[in-house]
Amino acid sequence: MSNAILNTGIPHAAIVIPKSYPDGHIIDWHHHNFSQLVFACSGVMIVETHENLWVIPSQRAVWIPAGTLHKVSMHGHAEMRNFYVQAEYGNDKELPKQSCVLNVTPLMRELLLHLATIDLETADKHEVARLIKVVLDQLRSAHQITFYLPVATDTRLVTICEALIAAPSNHDSLNEWAARINTSSRTLSRLFRKELGMSFIDYRQQVRLFEALKQLAKGKSVTIVAMEAGFSSQSAFSRLFKRSFGVTPGNFFSQK
Image 1: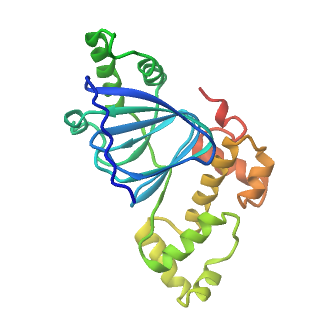
Image 2 (image 1 turned 120 degrees about the horizontal axis):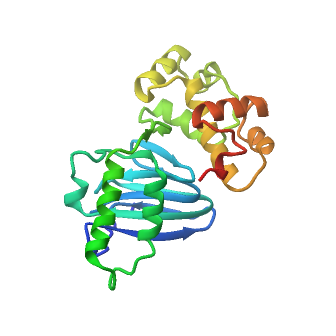
Image 3 (image 1 turned 45 degrees about the vertical axis):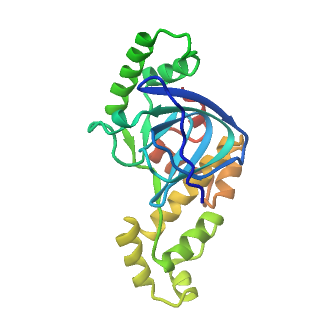
């Protein structure tokens, strides 16, 4: 595990750095002394901390406070804009205190894209400062999205959760898992709700939606994604997807 600390030497309150990564690229565990907003322009990014797995679909962003150990994996051709915020601004009481996925308003999107093109050595520092202030204002009022996967710590849950993430189409029941790890289904059901805040079925659905987003980002058809992610039918997949994201899977990546 790397403890690398990013040092951008930024001359302003914040800076936006554009990055592009191929499908499957992984940025291993690291942390830095700046807070960071990772905005996904295209593709899907999975950000892992010791507490949660966050999915960042296109046109969303994840907020990572300074000092938070995290790992990022790319699915599809991933284009991101990293908004690094100096510590004194990252400690602003109105900014999120923990990692979370945020909806990005059209105004914030355009500001992030524009700031990524600015040459900070020649730019008007007062103009840049004004733009950054607007982004910070947008960030303070951004709507948080609750779509994430909590990370299990109980060894019994870890076994099940890791297996489901590795094979989302697994259809084994809670009773079958209980027999496999020599415990009762009632105990497992209680552990899922107590430690992860959701039922076994809900957790498995979240895993499958995670997998579906990753596969959709690679350009696969909705029918193939539904089958590979373990849904009983394309219609069942589409209903759950629309309930979770407010749009059908076929239209998800066409949103701007």
